[in-house]
Image (cartoon, rainbow, N blue to C red; front, side, top):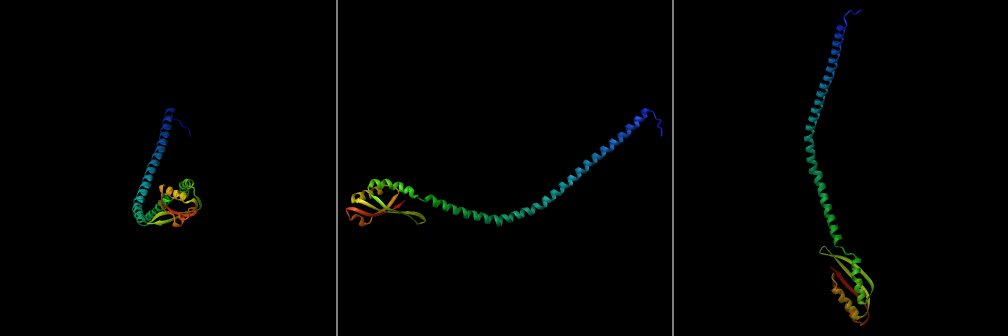
Length: 183
């Protein structure tokens, strides 16, 4: 087929054909975005309805959990903390034997007595620790033993210092047992 139309008419027809193709393509792109927006709106509405429906159930479950499990857990924590507090209080009140020996060593040297045996014990009175010390030793003279006892009485932290009567009978070469308590 032979086209006998002038060139200007051919250009106009081609322009109209291209124009129709552009309009159709833009219509397709525009309709795609419209349907995409509608689809996303529907998904958003569905998610919002699911969240609204599950929020009530979630709040009820949370209340039940708080009533049962959390209360039991809190009670256990309080019990555990009380136990830790008691342990901390016990360790806070304890005395170290090394601290006691630091106090006693200069007194023993200054007193001129010799220690044969040293014992340390812990008892409780009215839920408070009570530390007892027993010292078995040797004093060359009664005067040195007396000075040792006086030095112990002057020292802060020692109380209930006692020497049996047998310790005072001999004037020299005295074996003694001294008992004392720590405040």
